[in-house]
Length: 186
Image 1 (cartoon, rainbow, N blue to C red):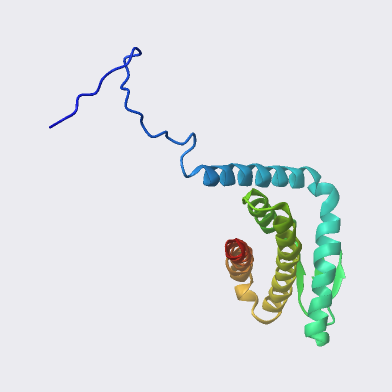
Image 2 (spheres, rainbow, N blue to C red; image 1 turned 90 degrees about the vertical axis):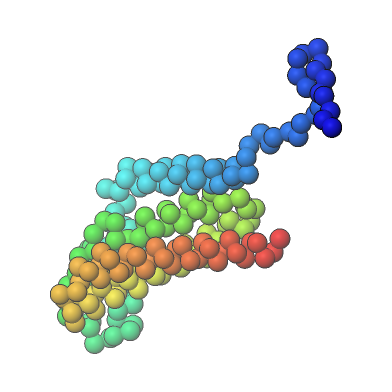
């Protein structure tokens, strides 16, 4: 036995239908991707626009000098020194623009800022994540110095494939652990 539906004056069925949400369930992910892309592209463009002026500071002061200090701390016999954007000791490597880790930092910053969390949690994540990525990049530069010194044939592979991949994986791993910690606190 079927029930006939009556139509109201508007010609539509009088039987109420469940309202569809204005945005589907994937709305938070769409928002995340859009905000992530905007923050990452804006950060990248800002870095590109200021690169010529800030590169000596970012590369020479914030990357090469601390890397030389790290190398000398771990292996004092290397007597490594920073000369501009170059590490000189028993091996020599030039640290170029892009090797200061800004791209990975921008990826992490964009992901944290795009994620739907309280601002306090985002600031804590950035206060921990940015120094983590920075420190990992210094370790990467110091390791590349030792690769150049002891196994120069592997330098290009270690620089382009291993080193960069490890830094990105550290950033992604930190972000995933941070997200997981937020889920546990809710």
